Image (tube, rainbow, N blue to C red; front, side, top):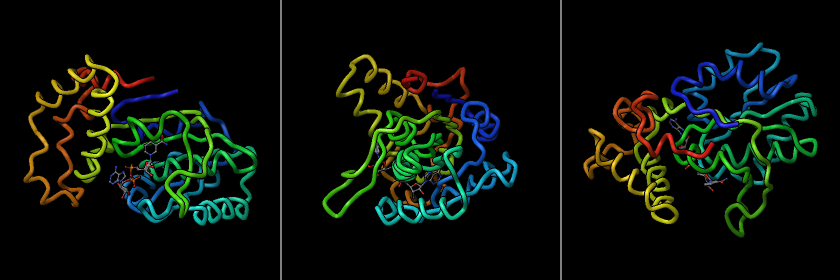
Length: 235
Ligand SMILES: NC(=O)c1ccc[n+]([C@@H]2O[C@H](COP(=O)([O-])OP(=O)(O)OC[C@H]3O[C@@H](n4cnc5c(N)ncnc54)[C@H](O)[C@@H]3O)[C@@H](O)[C@H]2O)c1
């Protein structure tokens, strides 16, 4: 089940409890996302039913060592087969948390709440999970489909512009590779927005405060005004 709606994160708790009932939930997130969205999500659950496990932000966390740390922490905290994992973050969190879910007690459900555009359009969907090894990226992993994917485009408001561009590049790539009409829709949507990703934005690319204006960018527009390429995401 994939749900896409602005403001969905504020209602994620009841949705998750309904679709993926569990005695306890382990939210796996990274340090940046935790500081922005960890508390709002946690506050929607009874305190004794939810733990937040935070990893350092970045690709360097997608390791066997971090997988061990997370699974050990869950075992020590008494998580069992009746638990579920909530992956709150970008593709790094999604891949790692998904792999923890695939392997913990031989597999427990995972809910993906992607917070980067790349994770929304790609990494959170399709069930590919995994970690990096010294021999290469994503070489150890498993297919473990999410029980639910909850996408709130409003969280893109805090995403650094560099990360937003990475997601847009992926969207354009799909169009160029696979689907001419879709590519046309993407191009039209990008051209019709009031803000384009101009070179001068590079200067401020590292600061979340300069993330795209979500009132005008297609991913965050109100449902009725969403650009076609956004609404045509696979469900
Ligand atoms: N499983 C798949 O099918 C699949 C597909 C594509 C990519 N991937 C994997 O995804 C990973 C890359 O994912 P990514 O590009 O999302 O990077 P990421 O998860 O590292 O996130 C990028 C940065 O943005 C920050 N961030 C995330 N959401 C934010 C928000 N809403 N506001 C502010 N900051 C935010 C993160 O803390 C991080 O610093 C790679 O490891 C790649 O292998 C997996």
